[in-house]
Length: 186
Image (cartoon, rainbow, N blue to C red; front, side):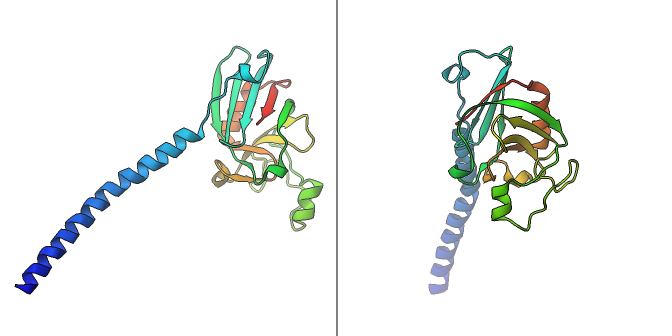
């Protein structure tokens, strides 16, 4: 009788564990969906600029998303990587002053100070180039919106000050953005 009772308890435990195991993926999936939905806060360009002009980019470092409006008002949103710390980036208004395909990269003086082992320069097209396949240069020295070869960085605090996008998305953005596009980092 004791072994029969233990079997019933074991079967109950087994059924309970099976129910938890079946329910767990949906609980995890619901949590992931909730986080993803809440991470993309859409901004209205009118809350930040008076006119669309040549276009507008708003990059939100908290939600790690970049929104771009063309001059005709069409909008796209992209996930981004953002600076490791608040001290590594600027916030405020700037603009796109230059665009480069396959840009070369050189670490800033402060990056060289923190990481003296880094190379002095990486040529465009090199898979080790942290700027990826395209870069939008901002009016602030050393600050860029650029691609990345390291897709693990997107959605994370991982940069030394720049805003990073998947290469295929920065290529799309590059084609949509003229020099003179207004930019705000918040």
